[in-house]
Image 1 (cartoon, rainbow, N blue to C red):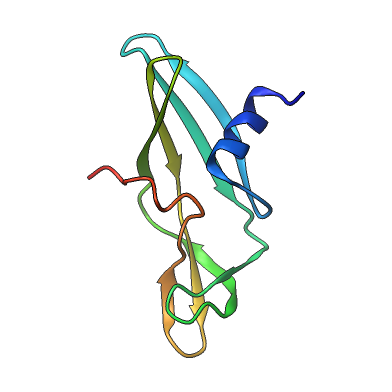
Image 2: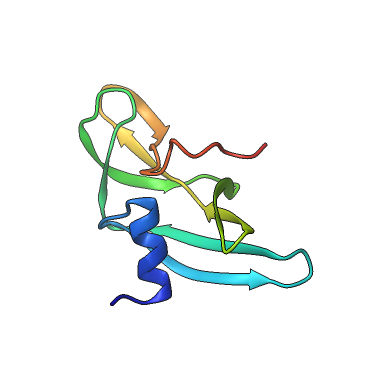
Length: 105
């Protein structure tokens, strides 16, 4: 059996260096919010060439994705995406493992 945060990690397909740090139900608008962080000391693939690169920084703004409903409540994934510095392609935002989930504007 796994805990609540592990349930979301499995649902999003997360592996190191990604992890769910918090999940909460917001009663006012009856929604679930899951917060994901990327390890600041890890390497991530360049989105252009897939070469592993050191994390450079994080984006300035948190991104939000709509995830599958949880117990009929809308669920949203939040993350400050890491940027990488690739020798060939410069600084780019890495792809999220759950990228097939549609980001909200």
